[in-house]
Structure formats: structure tokens, C-alpha cells
Length: 302
Image (cartoon, rainbow, N blue to C red; front, side, top):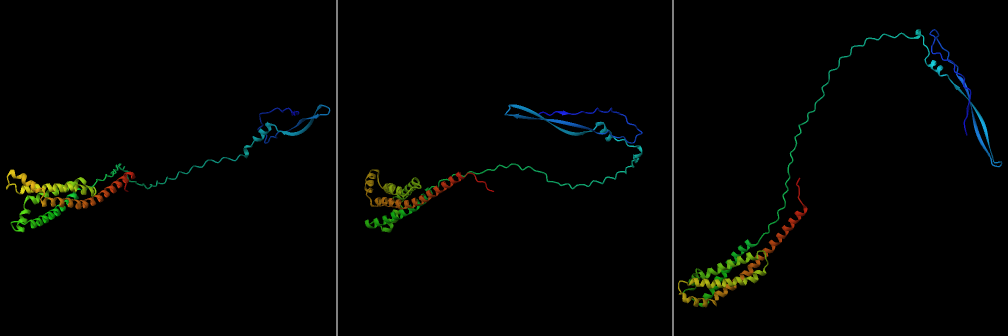
């Protein structure tokens, strides 16, 4: 469909760009009426005849067209000077009021910032526990065991003297025996052998004292022979030494000294071993606590 605009536009009147000053009012130009006819084409297809018929339908519309010059004149209408109100002379401006004195604002004073020095924090690492020993206790027990051994050895000597008989009274013979090396040498060697065994066993059990107590008894037995030789050294000749020593191997006091030394070592060694087990248990607990502290890491106190 196509639109066709048909109409006659009237010729514009000649424009006069001047206006008469004497006229008080100018009549605006009459608006022009323009009739616009729009023809609509309608296509009708006749399928039976095989032809196409184009019909035109005219639609007329009337529009009013105003002259642009007339519109400009209306917008700029002439105004007479008599109708203009006189312009009032400007009044003198009042002097400005004096500015108010500025109000001092309170000043807030802040303390000066002092930078805090960085302080290094030292965390002490847990100290590994020191294993405690049982040797000092063994020495103390050795002293007590030596006193007990000396008492048993002295009692055995008194009994043997009583049974064998002496030329002097028994009390005097016993006093002479106690003051001789044959009495003190076995006691000294027993003490040395016992503390040596306690130092080796340390926190060990009771069985080392039961086994190696035989060695302590052997040492005491040999020390008795040596003490007896020292007791008569100024009274015999070198040729008689071997005879005297051979007589002491089966001496009743030598055998009793060895037996007492072994028994005392076994029983007092059990005392030392019992404390050694307790010391070992405390050492294990201290080591476990040290391992827990290492696993927990450093701890900071508030």
C-alpha cells in the first residue's frame, strides 16, 4: 500500500520585516487551512478469475497551517512606552553589619604518641630430666652392712675362742683379737667390695647381689688370711710364712667371715635394689613428662 498526499498549498504573502511605530496593535495573519487527501490502495485478489484488482480509497483530512511570521509577530507584540512603569532608582545599600567576633573552639590536647619498643619474648625450652642414680644410697647401705658384718664377725670370734679355749681369760683374748688386723682387714674389704658392687648394679634388681655376693664372700675370706698374716708378721720368719698361711685356709673364722659377708651382701643388697626400682620408676615418669612438654610446644604465660 502507498500513501499519496495531494493538496494545494497557497502562496505565502510577501513578508514585511518593518513595523509601523504608530500602530498600537497588529492583526495577526489568518491561519491557512490545508486539506490533505490520502489515497489508500486496497489490493483485492480474485482467485476465480486469476486477476488482481487495485482499489483506491480516498481519505481526506483537514489541517490548519499557521504562518510562521504571524506566530513571530504574536510573540513579539509591540508595547507602548506609556504602559511601561517607571524604573525605580536603586536604593543605597545598607552598610554591612560588623562581623561577629570568632568564637574560639575548644582545643583537645592528645598525649604524644610514644612508640613501644618491641620486646623479644624468650621461651625456655624444657630441660631434659637428669637420670637419678642409686649409688649414694648404696654407699650408705654399705656402711650399715659393714657394721652388721663386723658385729656378726666379732660374735663368731668370741664363740670360737670360747670353744677352743685360750691361755688368757676370754675377755682379754677377745680384746686383743679386736685390736689386731685380722679383725679390721676383713671388715674394710667387705665395705669396699659391697660399695663397688652397689656402684656397678646401681638401679639394678636384687639378683646381681645374690650372684655376686659370692665374690664378696671370697674377697673377705682372702682378706682374713691376709689380716692374720699381718697380725703375726713380726713374730714369724719368712720361712714360716707359707706354713702359717696353709694353716689359715681352713680356719673357722676365715670360713665364717666369708659366709657372713655373702649373706649380708644378699640381704642388704635387696634393700638397695628395692630403692633402685623406685628411682627407675621416677626417672621414667620424668622422661614421659619431658616428652609431653616437647609435644605440646612452647607455652606463653599471660
